[in-house]
Image (tube, rainbow, N blue to C red; front, top):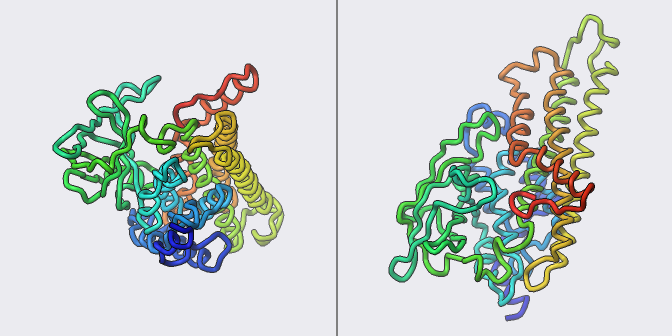
Length: 410
């Protein structure tokens, strides 16, 4: 099949690209009402519907596979913009783009084709991976099991922190078969035996559907299961595959700082009065408030620069792929860059989320203003693999040359 013929199979709307009028319009619709949705806990089903129809989830697919073929640098710049508009929407898409990166990129024997077709059609994929078992340190065994039944399989287990699955068309499930083999099953969220529970009660990122997923004899077809040891360059067999996921979160955090800078500037502009001992009559002319806004804006600039530098490192790892797998050294450099970015960006975001109140005074703490959402959302995202562990590994590597951990989001 020719490239033209393959592309023709995905005749649909052009995918909005960063900097285009279509993307600006999409971003505007996502941003509209984001604060109110956060306050009232209104889940962004409508906004995810817009993204689905725009096929934004196919940004990273090759053009011949129905995507836009963007670089990781452009993708993560897009994520920063989404994080500024609504960090909940951005995080909902994180596991989808992780799936696209693991299963939609070229693999030996064109094993990626069926998954790329799913993504190119606009469908959204969530994740059910994390379990609350006692084997967190040094082990990745799953209690969720895939068992043979008839011509296919069934899944049984309970997953937590299933971010995005509540809004998704499919869910990517990590499990083991009864012999201990690791497997990824990709099944519709509407499948019999699949239950999605909206029980996430965190103080930040309230709308991400990061709840519980239960599998009770959920049927899985043979072609919906990809075993790690047979994955042919796909899935979870690539070194440092978690670096993408980690940097995605950091990009969202960078977007939150940009939103905080915009809100801080708007807050100063609309203030009618200031402190009795302020150096200027109008708050907008107050050099102390100007400095505070400038510091938040500078933090946003530095955060995005760090994210894009790490994205360039991950792009180099992707470019090094042979038979579906990147060069180990290049993958490690990408992981190291993603870890460094998280260490600094988390700190900048938490500080900026607090500093916004320095420009607004006591009235800015009103619940109706909802300005605390920036700090809450950044603080919640920062808890995903605390920065202290990253900093320690970065320092150890610099001191002794030891590689950062291969497992986890490095």
